[in-house]
Length: 393
Image (cartoon, rainbow, N blue to C red):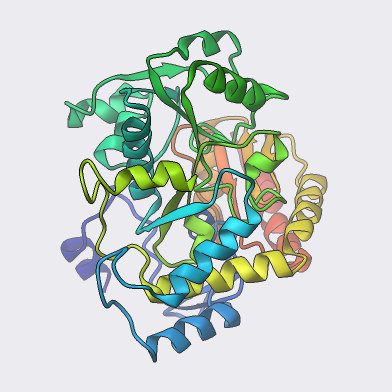
C-alpha cells in the first residue's frame, strides 16, 4: 500500500508521514496495525467535532438516502444549502447575510477577490506579508514569500503588501485599493494575533477610502478561538468573510459571505460571474449544518477557552519559548527549528500527531478537535514534555 501511495498518488513533499489509516473516531486516528494516534492536529483544523461525530455522520447518511449531486450551484433549491446559509446569516453581524458555497478555502478566496474587484471596479489587492490564503493562482499571488511564488510566475497583477500589525502601513490603503485581505490570525506565519486595535484601524481605513475588507477565517473560524469567528474577538466586521476547513467537520468545503447587494453583482455583467459545479453539494451542506448547529447549541466554544488555559498551564518547558494563538488554535514556539522537527517526528513514533506550520520553522501546531477532553489533552501534553526532556542538543 505504501509503495502504491508513493507511486500513484501525487505527493506534496518528499517525505510524507505515511500513516496507513484504518479508521478514526473522536480524538484518535487508528492505523492498519491497530495503533491509536492521538490527534492534536484535526486534519489541520478541519475536523472541528473530531472524527466521525455521530450528529455529522447521521446528517450525511440521511442526505445520501435522499439525493446527492443534482445540478450545478445556484440553479436548484436544495434544502441543506438554504438552511445552512440562513442559519449562518442569523449568527453573523450585518452586512454579512448572503453566502456563496464552494469546494475549498482557496476557491473561496478566489471568489472573494473576484467579488471585490467586480463590486468596487478597482484592481489593487493589498495582502499581509507572510500571509497564507491557499495555493491556487489567485491565492498564491497574495503570498508574500517570493521563493514559494517564483516557480509559478506570472501570477495575477496589482498585488501590494503591508506588514501585519503595522499601523504606519495602513497609509498604503488608498482610493485605488479594491480590498485588503487579512487572516484574522496569521496561520502559516506562526499563529500571530492582531495587536490591540489593529483590525479596528484597518476597518476604519478601508471605510475611509472605499476599499473592502476581506477577512480570511478559514482556519480560526467555527469556534476554534472561543467565538464562532475570530473577528468577534477584535471589534472588527469585514465586508467579505471567507470560511472553510472546520466548516463541515472534515468534508471538503468553503464559502465567502457578503451583503446581498454586493453578492448580486456576480449575477450579471457578466452573467455567472462566479460558478462552481459542486459548491453547495447537499451532502456536504448537511454536514456543515450539523456542525454549525452543534457548535452554537453546545458549550463547545466556552470549553475551548478552558482547554486553552489548561494547555498553557501544563505545557511549560525550557525549550518552549512561547505559546501563540487563541483557543485551540495554538502553536508551540520552540527554541530552534531542530527542536521543533525532533518533537514532531518523535511524537509521531509515540502515536501523538503534531504538525509543522508553513513559514515559522520553530513551531509545532496544536489544533486538536474542539471536542477533545481534558484527559486526552493531558495524555498528549505528557508525551510532548517527555520528548522535550529527552532531547539532547
